[in-house]
Length: 206
Image (tube, rainbow, N blue to C red):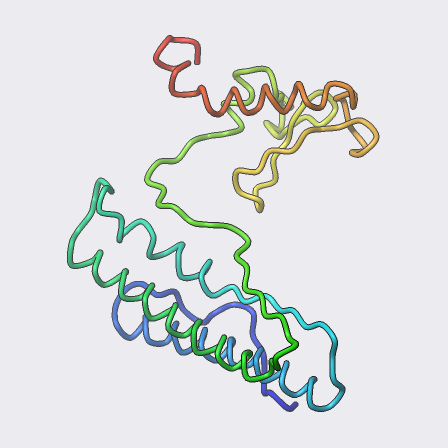
């Protein structure tokens, strides 16, 4: 009630033109200032010893703008690249504005920390990780449904988790098939399968 309504997802992606960009930037600015206003309200009303929050601004900015602004990308266009780089700059300016509001809440005894959960690099190629793991005997599929067969597969992935690979570990997963003593070995096999995929293909092994 004190800070106004809150939303998780932004109304539009920063692509397609200036109007879409401006609407997106307005959304992320509102959301960031909302979090700062909530922190201020809670501090004034109740006080706190420790406050933390998560703001997804740069993740939502990077995904649509990272590839187009990559000068080494196969379809790089200087004008489009400059436009997307400008979106990045504006997002960081909004980030600075929101951080300034949080800094107003800090006194000389307050420690303020800003952290990123991951970096971001352009990605111009796609790979079928599941098929690569299957080629190396790390993943198996049900012959009828073509879904991952957790009763036999040493690894599995979740579509909503992108390219993350999980080990089907005994004692952790209900269908675990990998003994704990083999966990590190399977980790190495996964890494080798993914890192060496280009080399293996050149040797006719994949």
